[in-house]
Amino acid sequence: MRNNLVILAIVCLATVFRANAQTDSAAMQPHTPLMDYSTPKKYVVDKIIVSGVKYFDENILINQAGLSTGDTVTIPGEYVSQAIRNLWNLKYFSDVKVYAEPKENGLVDLEIVLKERPKVNRWIIEGLKQGAAEELIKKDLKLKSGSELSDYILTNAVEIIKQNQREKGFRNVEVSVRVTNDTLLQNAMNVTFVVKQNKKVKIGKIDFEGNKTFTDGKLRRTFKNTHQKGPNIFKSSKF
Image (cartoon, rainbow, N blue to C red; front, side, top):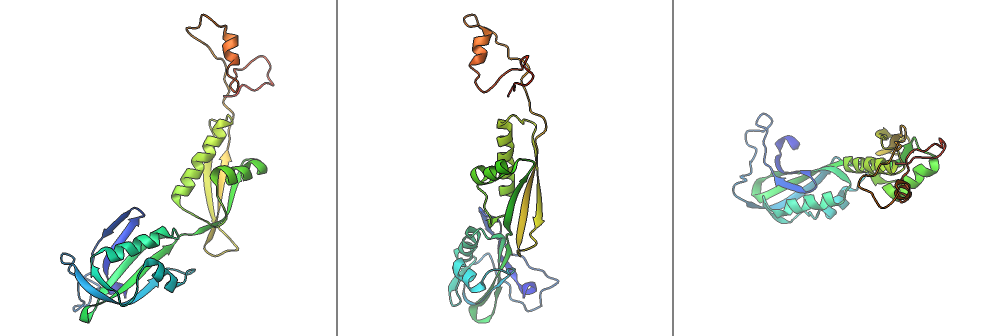
């Protein structure tokens, strides 16, 4: 069916929606009807199919998209654009496309082509103590089993982990990500953040310029959580 389709709308980003008509002249049959996208035309939806999904009910997705057979629609128009937005808003898919095939007597068939976004079964942090890792996942990252997997979530999580470790003095921390298929669940992944703390950054000395009223020692004591390195080698000089 797809070789005879005219691309009605392609959405590549959740916030960008555009109509785009394409034809494959090599695959098209000589008498395949073509849509004139310069002139909107009304059609009656004859059939709707869903492809690219394994774990969702097709009829439910059609309803959630707001599509229905028998609808009178204008192509191009808002009808399909809104359906695409509705599907993106579910946050279940990494790609959403809708194809249209015009037929005789003013009818049109629609095909919804989806790419399912994998879910994360387990979020793991390596390189930290178990308690610290679990607290970081729950309180700071707020990641749960069943969450969606996306580049944004991974990038944001890495930055949060780095900031958490910098506050603890590990200014040169490195964080990498390892994504693997879950062996027990279908369409599920396990994500591991590998943390390499490296050495803590410590302060060798704190100097003050322009101070005539207070002693340097008194000023240093105002830095409650930041200390310069002293003669006691066991005392932290936290940065």
